[in-house]
Image (cartoon, rainbow, N blue to C red; front, side, top):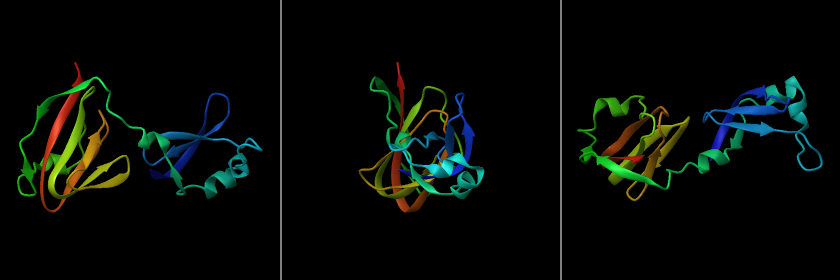
Length: 150
């Protein structure tokens, strides 16, 4: 998934690490001939990359633990009945995962600086402790499943 670079810091051995808008970090090494990123060796070069788009493999790798099990499910919500707290930024507690399941219509799911458009058949995976919110796109029907490792 694409994200943007919002800053840099050095790790414990002095390699540069990009701080991404999705809240992940990614090493940026200049190690020719395998990795050619001469820009990372100067302050001006790093500054020139602020706001640049970059692929985040960690976002693509988010997966619920394989031994997680559903323990609770909400009733079906519509655009009119979706609770206000779900429309504002909130987090799931430690160890709790969520699955936003769109039954009909469409919904925006905002997490880690990204907006995901969910339609029927799509599932929005919600990580523990990560701020997120949803926004209906017109008429929608959805429910939320809560999962944890027992």
